[in-house]
Length: 243
Image 1 (cartoon, helix red, strand yellow):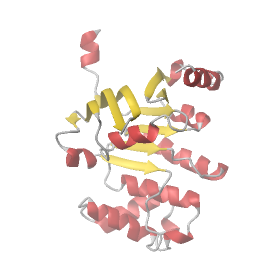
Image 2 (cartoon, rainbow, N blue to C red):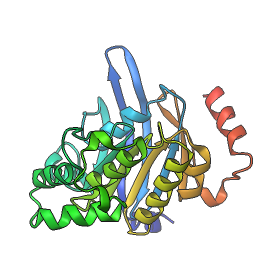
Image 3 (cartoon, rainbow, N blue to C red):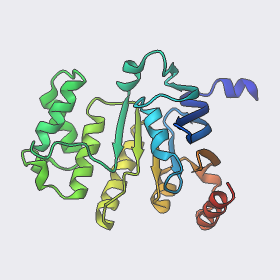
Image 4 (cartoon, rainbow, N blue to C red):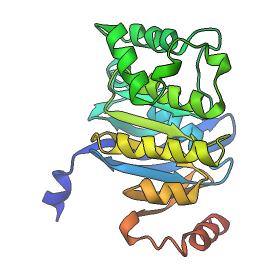
C-alpha cells in the first residue's frame, strides 16, 4: 500500500500549510495532494481561505509555515520555474480594457517569452471562441466574453496547472454554461486543475475529486464518484457548521 502511494504522481502537494495575517489565521494547517491530470474542486463559504490557498499555490504569497511543492518543486526554491507552469483564472479577468483581445493575449504571451506569439495569440483566441472579436477593444466585451478571454490569457503559455478562483462569479446562466463547456475541454487536455467555487452543480459535474474548506482547514476530501450529488448540499452545510 505504501509503495503504491509513493508511485503516485502529485502535481500539487501541501503539508500542514498555514498562512497568517497578523493575528488572523487564514489557513490553519491544510493538507492537499492533487494528482497529475486531476480536476479538484474545493468548496467553501466566504472567508474560508479559498483565495488565500489559491494565492499560495500560485506562489503569489508565501506560507507562514508548512510545506508546498508544485510539480515536485519546493516553492521556496524555484518560484520562477513554478510560475511558468501555472495559469490563473479568477473572478477578476485582469485584462486591459483599452487594448484589443489580440493585444491583451500578445502582451501576456510576450511576458512568458513565447516564440511566434502572434500565431499563438490567434490560436488561443480561436480556441475560446472569440476569433471574430479578436480586434475589438476588451471594454466592449460582456462579462462572459471577458471570462473566456481570461482563459486564453491563462493558457497562452501552455501551463501544466490551472488554478481557478471563483471563476463563475458574475456570469449569467448562459455565460456559466459556455464557461463550463470550456473547462470540460481543458480537462481533456490532461491539465491539472484546481477550482474554488460556490457553484455546487458545476463543481461536482466537472471534478474528479471534491473538498470542503472551512475556517482555514479542509474538512472533507473525497473522489467525486464516491460523493452523492443529491445529498452533497446537506453534507456541505453540516461540515461547515461543525468545523
